[in-house]
Length: 434
Image (tube, rainbow, N blue to C red; front, side, top):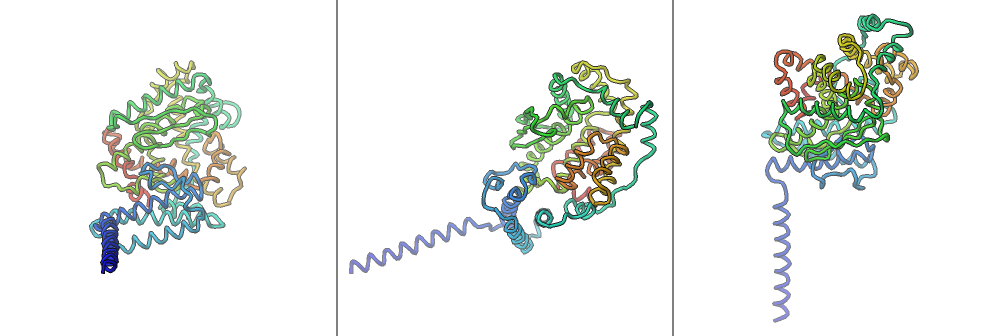
């Protein structure tokens, strides 16, 4: 009898333990619509950060929980396996009925669709053409202009008369902006401090934010990494800031109000706004990234009017560099025309990307028609990253078109508009890119 009692007691113990385990499991399962969507979002982050299995550069930045970061995990060794899991998660999300969270669900569906597309493209034996890649990866269906401005080339010819080709004369003029190697760090740090000061007048940056500079010849130009909690590292090659017109461009683009400030404000948005954990990962070849690149370029022109920039370069940076700048009117017009000629880049790139012209032909046209100083490097970059560079041109144009009227009458309002775009680049892309 005693033995039967002990067996019965043991059975009751097992049953009780099992019921407790089931209860714990049940409590840990998502129940509310928010919980269900959060669970899918977390799985999306795990899969998106695992893209490093395909290419280490495909994840541009991540500032979410370390528990969701798959960049250094060995779970996914096969891109095909990763693709299957993304498909399964996409189907899981599609099956959820979440009418009260429709906007966030739609955004997450777009992210998963993009992730699937990116995986398919990276595994395809043949890369897509220019137009197809823009539509599938960036959501851009608008026809890209394929004309160049001869009037701007003619104006530059008149501005810089003399012997040799126009590209030679442009290079000779730019050599007058060359910063001695031992002065470049001081010049860049002064430019960065001024870009930050101007940004702080319009954006409420948190007190803990910090951009740490590292100097290295191991990177081709400038490489920004956001570490989270307001902290970034900018690794910069001093050769990329050899000329006076590069210092402010890179300081604003990579620092303030560019990538560092962008990610700081995106992270702040997570604390108070509608963003979810899915917005903590930004893929390199994505519409979000194109928005951030375009915004970083536009931010340079918002931080400084042409006249303000010339005064700062002439009064502060040139003395630090120990050089004398060309005459003000000529220098401002030179920068304006070079900026306008950048519109000639995309038509040439399109022809090259679609195999219509050879590498050497493209480099010649980029130098002749767009005054690109390093055309081979640009084409090699495009060979490596596809149409990611669309953000520098088309992205900037779309943002400028959106904000330039406001900026003309109220620059602070334009700063506010720019902040709205960079805080939620996924929403901005859906609005800007058609």
